[in-house]
Image 1: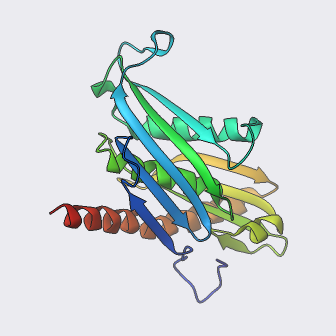
Image 2: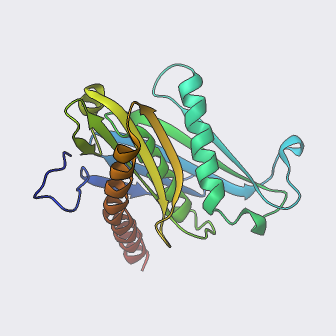
Length: 220
């Protein structure tokens, strides 16, 4: 969505989430953000391969599956980014010599894909009741050739932009924990995007609360 002078708080595309649709994982989330859809499954803590075993904490392993074909360099980059993000907030030290496995399945990529993946992982971890020191919310924005900032862009917006940036914030102090950027932008534009995306995370965190509240109300 494009920012303008009369819009002080950025709005995201409509979000919808279904928790626990998959029966075999310990937690799962199917997240729609606009027309972008990602499904994430969480397994564990469970057994870990000996070559991946860590004495002081759990091993966080993420497998990303593209919509079609085999994973390439871009998919491996997504795996590393998601793993680093999850490791930052998971209390892995509570489960030494075990593994927490996440499988992230691309269903539809219609823009802001990495941000949707991060948010789907966080919701799946919440559904699995994983111990975390904070939740995380990711927001993507792009800078158009006319120097406008578009929050939560669609694929068409991204194609017509000169830079795309994704920021991940934690819920306690709203500190940034992950950044992914590509394209050309100035330091001032980076700061403007950072501030805009931080403001937009308020609606993501509220969406988390509403989603978990809805699930708990069904359980009761």
